[in-house]
Length: 78
Image (cartoon, rainbow, N blue to C red; front, side, top):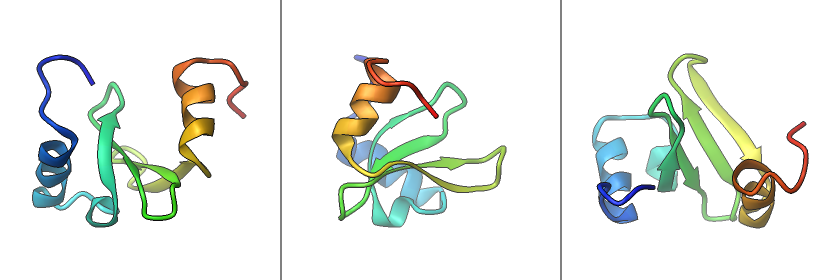
């Protein structure tokens, strides 16, 4: 997230209030360029809710893998 966005709790509340699927079970910590929320569930899995696709998709089994693949580009995205 950039400097103009709110705290993760504020962003989580924002997406939950709008009724985005999956976000009621996540801590939303980011979003993609299309505004789709990316969140962490209670088991540490990272999910995205894609409004174009119309569903929830698992991105990674853990936060470390998410950082390595999607943020740092250290591992290839499959």
